[in-house]
Image (tube, rainbow, N blue to C red; front, side, top):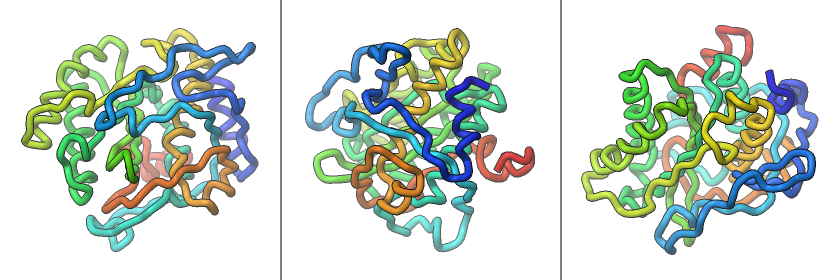
Length: 271
């Protein structure tokens, strides 16, 4: 296991996992701390860039926990305003398990559901349909995937989803060619420019294969970016360097694919 990802395991009892404070999403650095790739371009005020910021971020240690399934906590009408400690522990453990089963998270996809015309109450359903279509498209090409996602909302940026997924480099172009059709199918509307934004973690395809340690460092930063909507208590417990209001979300606030979820990790003794 790459050194950077192994730190997640080593810190699973609550000690903070440090990330260089100059590191930014998609610009994580090693050694001399120089950016690996350009920052995400800025889009129009209604575009996905409102959901992406490139300021310094940190990452946290793992503490075992579960989000659970079903019941009032995950009702389609339940509202929340921040990621909990249970959410953070589950997401970090899921990212580590994806690496362990050979499906490292290597792509970040941001979908601006509000700009696509999806109301806040339907955002969770829309994300579920998108991930289902992604998994089916890859399966038809003989590939598995793993993924985790977080919903955010707020004044000036609207409801959106950040998704980290495993997409083999050879199938990136295939998936990119399908995304707009998926969004038309989900929303029932013509695709609007810049609703979906997709980039390889670390700035180049195949980094997880060609330089696993560098990919792991970049993945830490990307995951930390997704965790920034944690509540103050959760952020303190996980020693997050950066917190921002996650906004009001209806229904599930975050989730993972089943193969890296708590049940799958329990079956392999890695909860």
